[in-house]
Image 1 (spheres, rainbow, N blue to C red):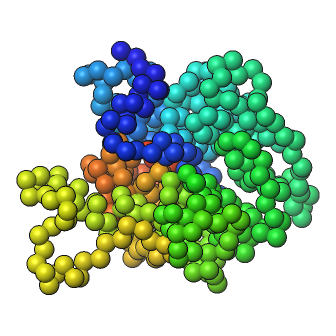
Image 2: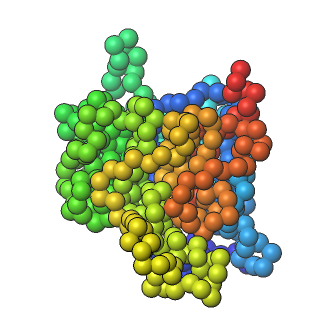
Image 3: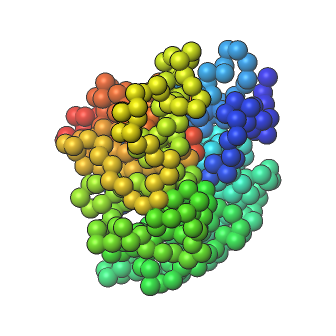
Amino acid sequence: MLVSRGAFILVVSIIVGAQNLQEATTCRSVCPGTVSLGARMRWFGFGFNAFGQIHGGDFAIDDDTTNEVKLITPTQLTCHVDGSCCKKTSGLRASWSRRASLHSNGGRCLCLAGFKAASGIYGTGCTDAVIGESFLILAFPDRIESWDMDNDEKKTPVWSMELKTTSDSAGNNTPLNLPLITDGYIAIKPPFYRPLSPHLKATRLAMGAEHSVLLSASGAVYTWGLGSHGQLGHGGLSSEEQPRVVEALWGMTMSCIATGGWHTVCISDGGDLYVWGWNESGQLGLPSRAVRQAQQHQSSPAAADSSSYTDTPEGEKDKEVFISIQAFPALLDITPSCEVTVVGCGSRHTAAVTSAGDLYTWGWGQYGQLGYEASCSDEPHRVEFFTKQQMRVVNVTCGTWNTFAAVVKEEVAAS
């Protein structure tokens, strides 16, 4: 029995309880280009697959296929296009119900997988994209277009904007880095164009469910928007209408930023990872009472108590520190021997790539988005699949409830 997206949302709401549908936002990492390995690089996905955004095909809810909603084992992505569209994936964007793959091989195009993926939107000639639940933003050398994903006709964009071209010192056109454009940024809902002060000298920008984070040319981090879960990193829970520098990071140069639904992470030039915001599902990698309760319940349901994580002796209880909200940046050590090179965030999970080529994930994992058996984890764990397959992870990006990793074979990476 095939079901619509609306019907599935109802099913998901029943399964996961009070799940805020604002999680259906584009959560992506914004890091400098790290690898260019061409056709030797392959993409794998795992996590939420109800609409075939990882493993293609229509989804039917019945006893034989319900396991396809949840993909724990990383699965190699396929391209849902004919032979006229190139298969070399140069980038990937994801939302809750869709995946957009950017391809290049002399020309450029964009292909969709997931909900309404067969709608005929293939942005031939586009250079970048941002995808949400209602709109798809496409960047071309001379313009930006927004397409209504709920309009089955899709013959023309609902909004477009001509671009001002900028050049570097050598006279070459400066490539776009969506959602940033020359004098502002593009949001995934109206109003699409939003200005930014040129004094910020923005080089990267990432958007969470209700907040934004910006990286400046000097490596400073600015945040604004809703602050109710500490996701702005200013030490409190107040919101900010305009970009405000994260003072706790002042003096340290950051090179990569990423946002989840209500948490924020960044990487320093030295490969250190800083995290702040909501930690209810362990998405910061810091001790979470809710996670420990869930883990205890799974291991021993009869012994679990909804009011306390464990029957720890009084003297030891005082030593336990759990963090639900981290309102200013905290340094997170994933592994002492390696630096972090790339990081991505889903709504309530985080994924990081190390200089050794390993992928670590933590946070909420109900749909397999951690790449291992765990409903949630407040400690980073390595995704062993890639190590066992002798694959080196070189990039990662996250959808709301899934994870996508770019890999090369170890012998290729070493050559």
